[in-house]
Image 1 (cartoon, helix red, strand yellow):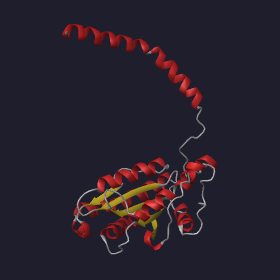
Image 2: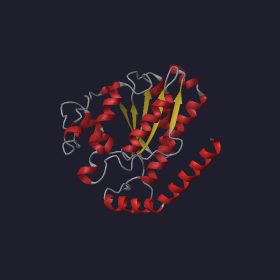
Image 3: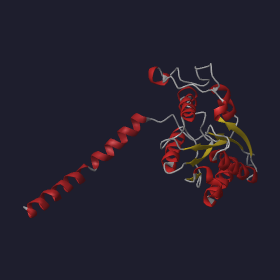
Image 4: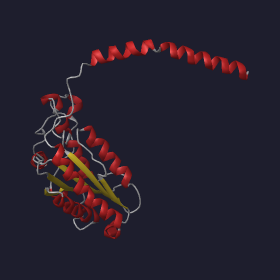
Length: 240
């Protein structure tokens, strides 16, 4: 039986009246039409400090709740945990996301690193989609970055999970962006209803065994390298 999906809609822009907000609102209509519900988060309503980088000093220290406890991250993170997925809508700041959104993403390392504490990233199995708005260029670069980051944290990215517009504050005049933004919401909610609560990543991999098997297989193929080198030598002789 499918789960009624709850999707966090994260507005990464400080301008609540801007196109990032507008296209995210359109995505919310898609969520509802797909049978889901949503929680709206204006990221700039929260105080989110920069990541300390504690995972690089001692991996065991980086965990949720985050050790930085004098800002709003842990409160905000709790609301993300209670959802089945999220959609981030962001303006493009020099081919990337605004600083506060970057802080938020960096701090989500505390979610991802739980794989070393509980065997599972706290974001694993959630579904995400992305919307970017720029005045000239950088939307695809920004979305590509977000997709790589969140997929690395264990998040599903379904087909057609992106929308973008280069029209700045005129994004509502961009018919394709409006259509795509609606579908980001619709598709993320539909995918979340199917994929919710499943575990995917297997941390119990026998690395030593896999490496040994691979090395043994490659050794058997080494003669192929010798044959290829011989071909090169013969071709060089023919040229010279």
